[in-house]
Image (cartoon, rainbow, N blue to C red; front, side, top):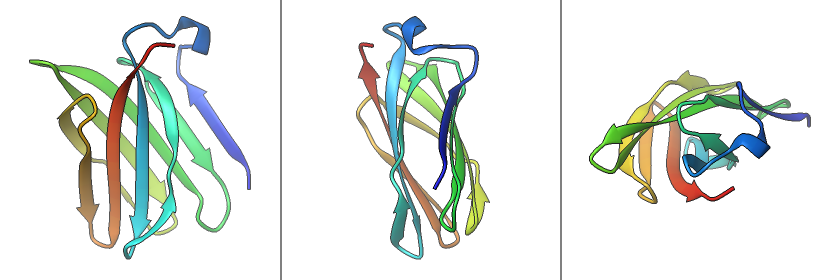
Length: 113
């Protein structure tokens, strides 16, 4: 199984206080098949790609939504289907989105680098 992570226009050394560790749980028919995590700099898209029968491509962006809230935008493409949810949460608060038999849970926690 191949695994790749890319941060567009950023390197780990440039991650500042505006970085978040975003964790996801991805399920199909109630069975979890992926639990990726990635450090995302505010406003910079991160991408996780895994090949194989349960492979997927997940792109995430975290933006300031004002009033202490975060806007997490996800683009998920799997062999089971695709979705592009956007959730507004406070750091450390989880959100779950379902589309058909697919479900993704997202949580962003501040990362000090």
